[in-house]
Image 1: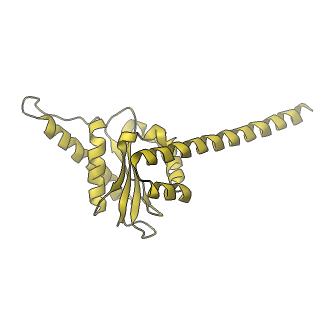
Image 2 (image 1 turned 90 degrees about the vertical axis):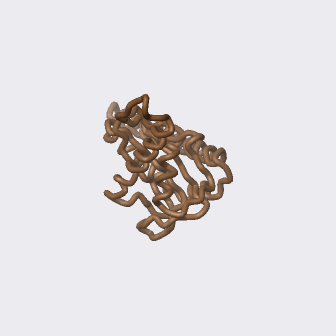
Length: 193
């Protein structure tokens, strides 16, 4: 999976000030809530749009807290990938935060976290998405990518960094596939001889 398939420019934040892991989850909830398909039982006459928006933010934040109780999403090297399950939806929702200073995240290496890729995955897509999530997490752990993301000065620059990383990834994947195909071709030729 590509970063640019998962993220949108609008869901990237640069230089965010946060005092705690809890506050990062609240910010993530605020960013993702407008896109989240969350079912509510409410009376349209009595409920205002502002109330619904706030409830969606709370739900999104809670989805991350619920998953975090199962296991810490801090990966090390100042990176975290919190995730949560949406009750329904057609695609994963994601946001990326570059924090101005790291926050205590109880990460395995005890390093404060300053780069966060948060993902909400619709329940029905969890199985299909697990390998993609593992792949994108591994890519995000690349030290050169992290270094570039940390020094980026705008969300547009962060988006460009992700685009360039996706291009490199596609080129590497194409090369690996080409090599595998050539090896298979060689094996097929050998069998024909």
